[in-house]
Structure formats: C-alpha cells, structure tokens
Length: 137
Image 1 (cartoon, rainbow, N blue to C red):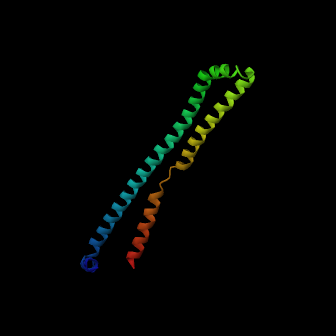
Image 2 (cartoon, rainbow, N blue to C red):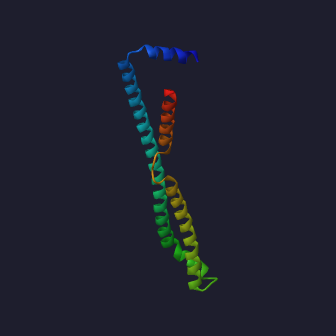
Image 3 (tube, helix red, strand yellow):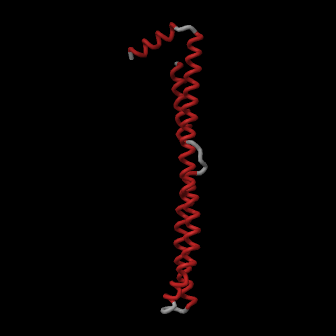
C-alpha cells in the first residue's frame, strides 16, 4: 500500500508531457499485447477447426475404402447364412453406422471451434477497460 502512495506521489510530481508520454507508451504496449493474444487464439482455433475438417475428410475416405475393399468379402461371408441381397443390406447398414459416427465426431469438432473468434482477448480487453476506469477514480 505504501508503494502505491509513493508511486502516486511520484506521478503527481511529473510534468504533464511526461505523463502523456507514459500513457501513450502504456496504451501502445497494451494494444500490442492484446493483438498478440488475439493472434494466438485465432491460430489455436484454426488448428482445431482444421482437425475437424480432416476428420470429416477421413470419414469419407475411410467409408469409400472400406466399402470398396471389404464389401465383397463380408457379403460373401454373410451369403452363407442369408440370401445375397440380405447380406448386402446388413453390410451396408454397418458401414452407414461407422460413417455416421465419424461424421458426427468431425461435425462436433467444427461446431466447437467455428467461427474462429478470440474469446479470451475480449475478456482481457474488458478487464483492462474496467481496471483503467477504476484506476481513474
């Protein structure tokens, strides 16, 4: 507490030009820090959104390869127990369930990270504004 009163007294002794210079330097530093924080947040959200897009793409590729490579084998195996059309239907339903699970996961990842707006930066800017407003009093 004594440090603050000493600091306040020192500030009162400074000429107005020096106070304005310090204020300008502090505002510049604060703006630069907020911009750096916003960049970091945007990059993080962009990477996470990219992961979601990749998962959706992987879901499509996996579905095509799985359907192409394993369908004939599964249908042939199930055709020993069911008519061929029934075996094909069972295999198609299983593939559809797997594809839906992958698509749901990728969609959820995208919804959590889009639009890529910086959340923490806005909060810190509000805190800084409140601090400056209260400091003035």
